[in-house]
Length: 337
Image (cartoon, rainbow, N blue to C red; front, top):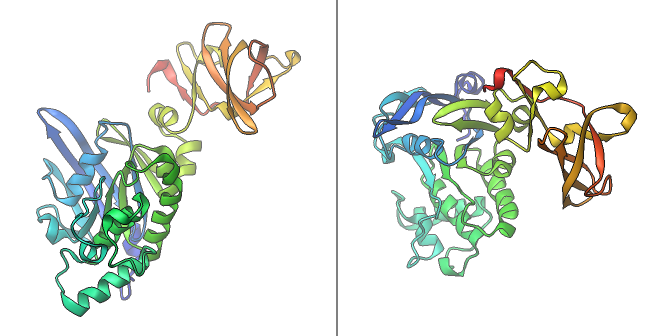
């Protein structure tokens, strides 16, 4: 996995893992539509999208669990599209981990290893250390926390030294209180190994925290791929602008835009202004407190609702206000995306 002897820079430029126009349909419905992505060696790529967007189908196509209708999957230039899952040397962590309750941690991690005996024991010890579970070999799975079980599943996937790691909604079955800590532990473990990783999630915070880059998918199509900052600050479509982060969808006429246009504005790009500063008029109808700041819902003069992110004591519910827009994130001409 170290990349010794390879031209890693050139390899990363063209994509260690390449997805070329991958397509899949079910009963005439296109689940994945000519999807293309390049994933450099060692990158953690998040596939983010709403339910039914095609992200899990994409992961299954990568793993070889289903054949594509068209397109190719390549690793280090090798076309693996027709290979069986085991022959691809991809590691897979399933949503519910699929650990064997009758086996201890060491036996779970060793399951499927080609080597046996002392060699298997050494490999198990190595990968448990990678995921910060050294010495857990004889523990029963039922004795572990949800986060520890997740790392055991990760260790089992890493044990055969896969070329690519795939994760399906890796944190979805954890209690919300555990997710942030487990997400951090998972990210640190993957970075220690340095393995090229693709994971599926519908949680934006998870995608932004774990992923080096995020690929936003909707209706089987790639809407945009980029860093979390790029997606948040420079969305390439109205879908990305409204799906990633919180956003207000305002009639363009309110901000001097073309007739029939829409203006997508982040709540933090709006501020309460004095009467002399003009701006949008409205009444504060609700406040959602989030620490030192709050999301204020404002009902505009034309009946439109929008949110303003401001210090929590800025205004009170029921107060008449004016709101200035500091930046429009995305203009939608003619009301279309």
